[in-house]
Length: 65
Image (tube, rainbow, N blue to C red; front, top):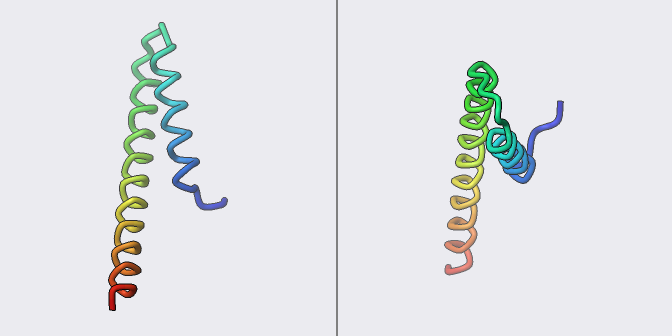
C-alpha cells in the first residue's frame, strides 16, 4: 500500500463532501463512517501542512544566514 499524498487526501475529502451533499437517503452508519474518514483525512492534511511550514521556515532561515 503506497503512502497517500496531500493531493489525494484533499481529493478524497472533496469526494466525501460531494457524496454527503448529493445523498438524499440518511443512512446514519454510512454518514458516520464518512465523517470518521473525513476526520482522519483532515488530520493528515493538517500534519502535512505543518511539516511543510516547518521545512519552509528552516530553508528560509538557512538562506538568511
